[in-house]
Image 1 (cartoon, helix red, strand yellow):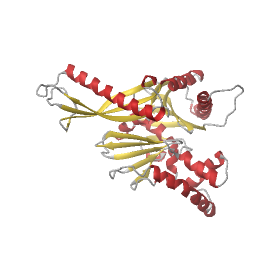
Image 2 (cartoon, one colour):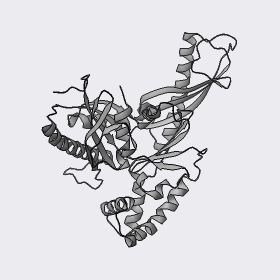
Image 3 (cartoon, helix red, strand yellow):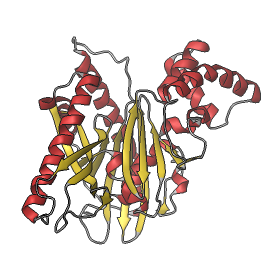
Image 4 (spheres, helix red, strand yellow):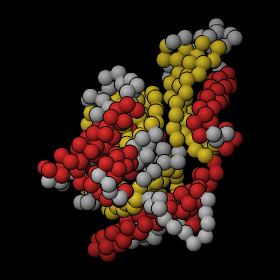
Length: 379
């Protein structure tokens, strides 16, 4: 049996529970080599029926559970064939889970010292940081309440950290031993509805899934280029939401979420071309992969023009200061979805040169968040 913590080789699973689909990869790491052994993908059925009446939230969670189960079964079935061939033995791998229910945000706050001429001690530094994080939590929870109606006491915070600090307008890496009055902070938070996260964890328990860590993609993105790429915009187009991550001087600077995604284009196709939801999604994917005849492609392009207008309207206030944009996520495969910025590039599985090997069928940008975690999440 190969252990997850075996120094020679680590075998683990990355699970991405999105708003439209669940994706997963079984990954092998040995020294500096990362291999994608198998994959799974399952779309979340929002029309499922159950024997007994069920409230809307539990209905959604049951559909999530079915999709997660199906996705894991697919990946393990493929892995079983591989392990039989290559004599790899493993019981139950640890899972790192990306959850769409987790949100990420940044907040700015300031602190005014009463004794600016005195050097900041370790004790004062800790007190100032506690104040900054508390102020950021308050700002973010108030904004989240306005958007969702969820109270601050019903939020679970999985990460709160100061990502930028400046004293009297000058950036500093540490406050200790420095003088100054006004201190400005930027804080990153990762959080989610406490009750919803509790139910997601219950799903993992019910499925006997050994989840070692839950994450938001913003926690891993900074590790991807380790400060080498100074300014960039990363756009993750999911099924129902699109997340934008602005990096300045190699550090995450701003996070924004828009309540639109690839599913909006599927809905446009379904409405304009009188198709069922699944038919529209498959047609959209064939169009993105350039598998249609010229005539069919033109019909789909014309139909999508209706959705493109709404899409551009949603992002019209996007202020990108000329940063190169990198798109990923299932919705990014559609060229109409990438028109929100000028300098743009799609991140595909083949873009990651650090991968030693990858399952042949993994070609879609849908799997990019899982690949990023596979390569760059080290603890």
